[in-house]
Amino acid sequence: MPARDVVAVVAGNGLEFYDFIAYAFFALQISRSFFPARTPGASLLMSLATFGAGFLMRPLGAAVIGRLADRSGRRPAMLLSFSLMGLGMVGLALTPSYRSIGLAAPLLVLAWRLLQGFSVGGEVGASLAYLVEAAPSGRRGLYSSLQPMTADAAAFCSGLVGLVLSSALTPGQLDEFGWRIAFLLGAAIVPVGLVLRRALPETLAQELPPAGPAPGYRRVAVLGFCLLASGTVIGYVQDYLTTYAADTLGLSPRLAFAATMVSAFSMMCCDPLGGWLSDALGRRPVMIVSTALLAACTYPAFLVIVRFHSPAALYGACVLLGVLTGLNQGPVVAALAESLPQRVRGRALSLVYALAIAVFGGSTQFAVQWLLSATGNPLAPGWYMLGAALLGLVSMSLLRESAPVRRAPPGLVETAQL
Image (tube, rainbow, N blue to C red; front, side, top):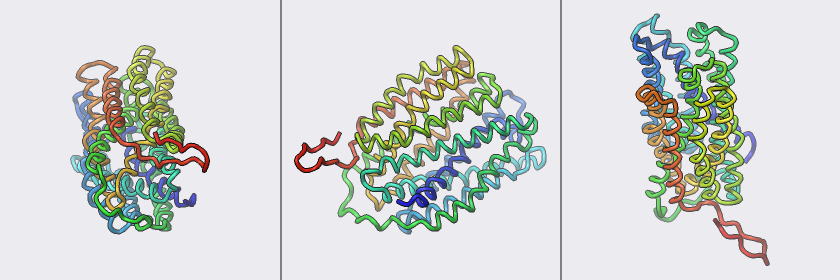
């Protein structure tokens, strides 16, 4: 698979997630621009609810764009989703504030979030299907891991942009126009991404369709839903650490943005490592061991954050949780893609992912903020994340191994598939 094609697929996927994660990072600033409220915390809750509304459109985008990917090809589906995301990013960045146009402002923000949710719903399945179909059979774990890696890279870039803006601008300027710069920077990459994606070769017809229905197809879909729901909650709790550090721990915006950068960078570095290990050892051993360690470390990590209330404790916990999360993401997406037949791979991946995200991803940050407000317990995000890790662990143990069987050279014992 040529490097140019890899860049075209993963760069588009990264930009899709840059927008969604940037919104989470700038939730406080966006809430002040579009959702003024007299009750403390209500403005932030309305902003997070609008963030979650975008997830409701993901299943529809998955059905429409995923169907396009399975019927017309992966490339046209990825071009459509990329174009819609760029339109939504520009629209959100240029929407006037509530002070300027009143109620029309939050309604426009909601419309842009719905459009962006629609586009991302179809992007994930098409791009992951493309990576699996274009990669050599013995490298599918590594190639599939590029998708979560670019999503984590997008989170890192969002945090870097936020750190630079929060350092260069006053809090008032950050509320007024600073957050808009972050979205416009992402939208500037859209023309380059479209050019790269137009040159992609199509992969839809490169595999022979199976003769009959794939065995265990529904079982894979159910387990995939649970796995992606688990990963979504885990990922978005870590993305929420920016708002958590600023709103709950009382850290400065600069220190808060750095926390999520550390977490995202740790995941980004370990994503390809997890994919590579799954090519050598199998998908199940890598994702089960890493998720079990994540479940064991989640509560102690949040306990240390709350107990010491320092940037060092926060960043240390971010590194630990980020490394363990990164190791399991590549094997999970590779196992799901390999377990589905090509003729429905784009639509099935998109729908399973979109439904899991719509139910759990769109509600995670709102739920965490509500739990913090209702219980007053700063450990609430840790408990929420621990429950998600346990769900993922059970689902992984029930998923069959999908990595190709590796055979030893003639004269040696055949290598056992894990």
